[in-house]
Image (cartoon, rainbow, N blue to C red; front, side):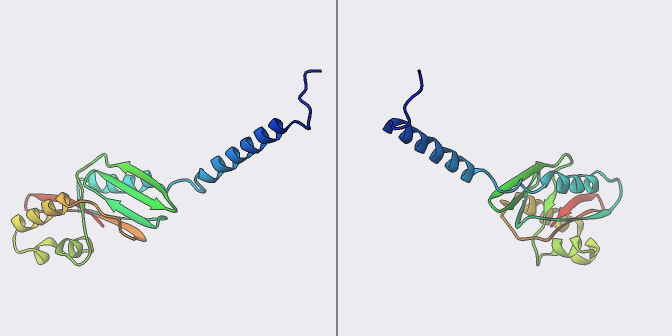
Length: 154
């Protein structure tokens, strides 16, 4: 009695618009959850909070990583996860630098001529704008040398 007849054209147009909208919405949903940045940040925090020199390694399941002094971002398939460090600032480290050598296990006194040089290199690394880099794992090392305490992340 109050039903619309199936032959009406506006019923078919409305159904087509509703279907198109539903397909468009489904296509914009992410295919996978964002990478687990909080667990990587927890590894950094556990090393940074240590009272002793410590090293930690966290495997990454993300295509790219960006590390800043106070935050970590992981990106994979268009989804981005991020987390803030509870114990910051940390010192992001780039490859082929003296800080990278220290991160990999070289004592700071072998990589730098003086603690002041080590402090300046750490400050310069923290002042750089974070960039996206491909990484398979995150290495974290807390280092103390004659009053210079840094947490290196690379």
